[in-house]
Length: 260
Ligand code: NAD
Image 1 (cartoon, protein in one colour):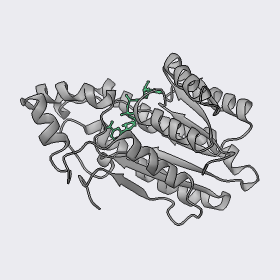
Image 2 (image 1 turned 120 degrees about the vertical axis):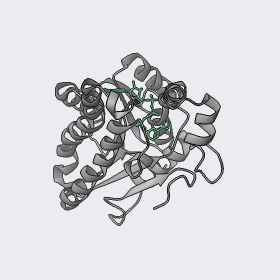
Image 3 (image 1 turned 90 degrees about the vertical axis):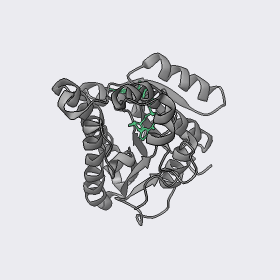
């Protein structure tokens, strides 16, 4: 029970990676807020967790809206009385070559990934800074926080940007015992990736099987997708790490696809 007594707010937690982190955190003793733009799905995940005897709530939150982020964060404090861990995880993918990338899609991508990270951090920090009680902020980066791929200009730009935000927070938050991290997964088989397989096949003129074997897994050491649990166990390790030794760092979880 590494997270006994802790309260975690996880964005994009109705699906995929965020949902698995919520399940793992709940099993480790945390009370979890499942924040998502899809409230029905968030509530379903919360119900699943509550049925195990752990504590969870579903929270409606569009991370691009300052009002929604502030209201959602307030509802977590109202429900659980404190906030110890923020996982800024909500994200989408839009693939297109740069010449065809619409400005509207570019702005949408940066709004969800970067505005969302900023707004949720800003809303969470006062609760962590209070009496220097401290906390953990984890941004969901990607191998694309360090590496580029064709068709992903906005995603790669946004995921690189999270490294900067985490490093600033590591320096500003230290005096208040707040630590920040970026987790950088390789390809994880979630709805976000399933949607990309036919899109990339069309854009690159190759088969879906080739997208999986060459584009997604070609550079891993074992030809295996990173799993939601690979990522969730990393998030558990970081949130329970006892000192500030690792603050400001990014952690690549990619079956050897990208090594630093
Ligand atoms: P997913 O599609 O399974 O889940 C994303 C969740 O975010 C969904 O529940 C969705 O409703 C929610 N969401 C979307 N827009 C939102 C908004 N504006 N406000 C609040 N919630 C919103 O995707 P996933 O694969 O679990 O991705 C989660 C994070 O992990 C993303 O930041 C993604 O970039 C990152 N990531 C994923 C992979 C991968 O291969 N799947 C790899 C590296 C990084």
